Length: 553
Image (cartoon, rainbow, N blue to C red; front, side):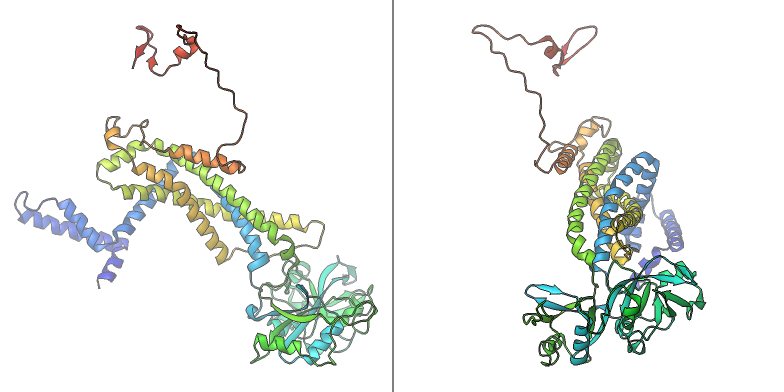
């Protein structure tokens, strides 16, 4: 019952009603009591509020509102700090987005964690390419796996007699869409009946993006004719908008049955029936059959019947006996981009991490400089009874508000930067298509980076503000701005760390040619060295008085 009462106290109207009842009750008690009998009624009211509500939560809300007011009153400081942090957070978020899209993100298919990729292992290397003849043998003789195959091709397209730009396409087996669990957005998917007779199934599916780009989402596209390499095909379906196949970075516009390879690839030989050149142009994806485990399926592949000769041959026609079949997880798909850019992206992630540290050092210096002008305010808060922990929390909340604003701006910068990077990578090659829409993982990463950044640059000013020497500040108008607590100066420490991150070859300040110190003059025996006039004028123990001459301190 007490918990519900405290939760109800968070509602504004319930809080106002409770405050009104408490004031009336205290007023009536004060009228009945004698003078000075009840003590401090204000303190009693504070104790009652602490029993009713959530004191820490209320104080955090007060700190948050105060932080927003103070930042609104200093727009130049707020804009500078937010922009500095947003650049660092945005760079980290952009690279995390690319790494996530290329390396970690699951395929948009049914149960992606159970998808497997079949390859040929020879020593430590695994080759994922097969000939169509190898695929047929493995498909017909294995009993523990459900298999599907696909191959990439560039297709010459004509619509209504008008040539179109060359499109990226895939030749897929009859069980490709059913194995992946992909339901069409319109029409039907290609099935086993479309994969029986070579050159006998002129049907095609188009991608959602191609449907939108070329046909303006016209529902009458199903059944519309389309010419591929001069032969008319019939569009039978449209893939869902999120589907791009199993190769990350590609986005095929058309899917045709693999049996139509001689038609859509006229410049190549017939790769389906006894080709002269044994080209490994097919990739095989698989799922475990019902009741079969991965080790059992691997053992079944290793013990295929002798007549199921799937092994590749050398140029002399000899069978390569040292090649075995291997199953690897394919939940995140296949990607040439992954092999090409994973290591550079991780290196860049470390570099932009250093950039974020520099941004935190810059912002920390700004907050320290701003705190120097607020020393009187902090001293007054301590003098009237505020605890040092409350003061630390106030400054940390201001830092977290700055970091939150920078994180929101960083997401926008990352959204634009990732598209620029993908466009740059796509130059001179097939367009690279990645799913760069922010998801929960990306937002969580940005939130964590923003939180850590806020704590990093806000901790030093917060602890410095709580270490005010009241005996010293009292002599300087309750918090003068010149005297500080002895010990290590946080501002100098932040500057030193910033310089060391900019020059990682040296742990402290960068190496530069400094002017040589003047040599001390040695006086002859019995004579004193006279100090130069310029040095005497600059001595700190003398103050120049225009009327009475120099006065020693």
